[in-house]
Length: 361
Image (cartoon, rainbow, N blue to C red; front, side, top):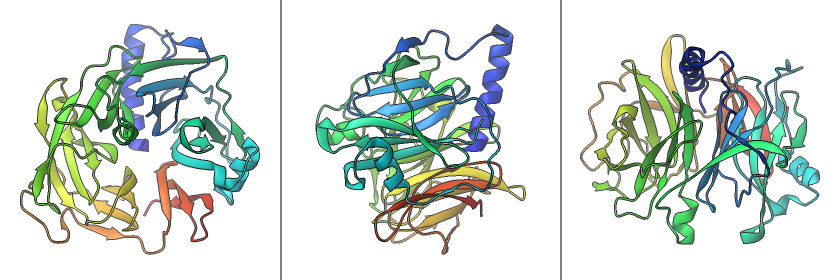
């Protein structure tokens, strides 16, 4: 989750909690036990050290009280080499037997949590690995821990669709915003789930114009999203494969509705967006996006509020301007580490992984 969005969410939540009760806690109503995760995928943080994890195979969102609330000042800028080897050693296996799915930085502590599979296929064990601000690794033991969960309705039942039932999620304003697919005709969904978890509605069906394909689409899932305030109103900035960038006002996300997003940029086809965050530098707003084939992009958000929607076929790129960071290669995941830095998960040409803090460009 982006640092700016998390601070906004924390401020809104704090105001609500203060009004309701000085002792209010997001863990109220959680059960103590072992969350029965079938898989671990997208992850982000809510306040009070609560990790939100998408269990795609179980079509469920889990909220896990990690207890990660104590701030320890890092001794040096975070850098963890041979991360996959260290995770494999921690779990008693080899690098070929683990998959890293996502990472989330707790903005309250600076510690990082990775969602990992130990093993491949249906028998893989879901694991959450903590990397503290000094670079030490440890497994988050999912036993006798406070947690709650919310089942996703109308989830796809086929294996391919199930993988995309939750593609990304963020926390803001006392709710969890979840992107993914449903089994409905208008399959692409944005869902808003009250937190602490209440009932989960069917969500909002979202339609976009995909300039690279030259058509409207309702079945392509959002791949990654960030929250950004536009004119005093929170918006979802969502990126799709091949690579339209689309905005949706959060106020439009009403259960059972069908809405069209505003395509504010086309960032190139034959590409899959992997992760993104929004940030400010020198008083200007930017989006930083990692991609499978087009490197790391810095997108200028100065005109996102007034940008015309792309509604015609685009041969290459169009819309909001961007630049590609030539010196940052192999980024698979990224998150906001602090005010001036991002944390990136880098895959080397040889296939190994590392964590590294980099200045926000």
